[in-house]
Length: 101
Image (cartoon, rainbow, N blue to C red; front, side, top):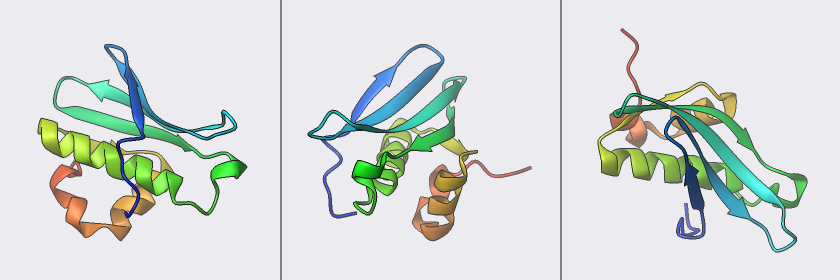
């Protein structure tokens, strides 16, 4: 990822959250997640409007979630098909991927 993740905002409640990337026209690309206890999140949706397509916005959102999970010692369950495909492309993220039992 060559784009900085600092322009990605995070909004959270006690049980859910989302990472948001806002475009100049007000469009929003988002990744939503649910919290499972204090050590795990489920990425359940990644939405990227047409105005962001081809710019790597979705991949940047997943990468930011990985960075934050790693820093907090959390694991991620990527239920969102896009997020799951990003985990397959990035074996270096295996440390935050929730292992199946």
